[in-house]
Length: 114
Image (tube, rainbow, N blue to C red):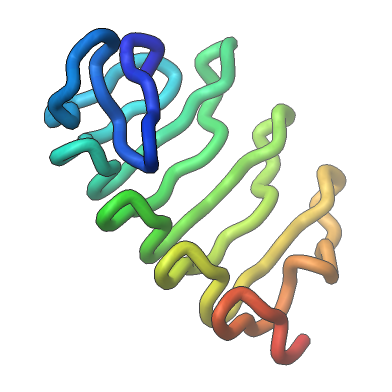
């Protein structure tokens, strides 16, 4: 991703005016198609530890998503639809207790029930 720049929501290689298509490696790994992130993306912290994993479609979060704290503890898991929280989500504090703010059922990005 360090070799790419984002302009108007699309990724380009530096000094090239055609949207980038190809695999991205490094701390963020996944596929870019015609300038937009697609499919499974994985993000790692500087120390190589898994930070987040999820799906993107047409550059937007779509489908299953998980994130982890620096101690390896699960932070949140749930689904996105068109870049918005959708359906059941569970969030955890670093000590493993439930994080109520991010636990419940969501619709169009808004929490509709606990």
